[in-house]
Length: 304
Ligand SMILES: C[S@@+](CC[C@H](N)C(=O)[O-])C[C@H]1O[C@@H](n2cnc3c(N)ncnc32)[C@H](O)[C@@H]1O
Image 1 (cartoon, rainbow, N blue to C red):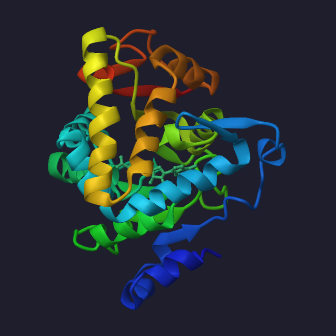
Image 2 (image 1 turned 90 degrees about the vertical axis):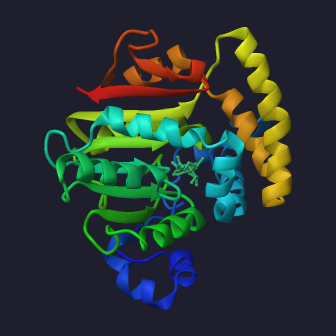
């Protein structure tokens, strides 16, 4: 039996609570600790800091708890609106709905930016009102913002959209069985997860054979001049904007640092293949597609 999480239930208005239960499921991320979570000696990066692996998840949760209410505004401010272009291009290249209605899962979906684009794309281009997206995020506050936003759309209260509080590394199999989805998206989320291989393993499990894994993430800029300019902008302006607009320098400092800790394009492509996906060759335009010189990048894989 699916139920509303306590945090989501208490944070939603009463009417929403009555309307949304069948669309929101939950999983406690700590119910099935992985072997790594039980080992205290292992470490993970949290931005430029090294922290015990088991504490990264709650530190990341704190960041997104803190930024949730200002997340959309801050995304526009820090990227000067460019994140919208990247997301538009990411979704339109996937052509959701082209071959008929699709079952999609958008993991680390936050406030629903990608889900909304998938549904709009399918409807506007293929008159498709059956494609559906399950938005999954570990953070109830981010989901709450997404739920509130979808209330203003035609998708609210339809089977096309659902919100689920769960960890990308351990999707609850009773809600997300094996071989279920045609498309798995994850945008600007995977670098925040403690174990990238576990996320990829879960993506592989829930996709149908032939299904597509598509990840949009900040990546490695190879042009030295662009890289210097980008470093200067991101390490000075983004934490400053975080302070001014969101009153939170530390969270934005973490977000910038976490980008630099993410594996470069070929290394991430290798991890995708190791999880059982087929990718293109290890070149830009093959296994990945750089955007803006690698500031952002889309990696794709097909489940064999
Ligand atoms: C930068 S936001 C991206 C949100 C959205 N995909 C977008 O592009 O606007 C990263 C999201 O990843 C979520 N997240 C971090 N770790 C996660 C995990 N282990 N499982 C699921 N979601 C996670 C955060 O709560 C946050 O909502």
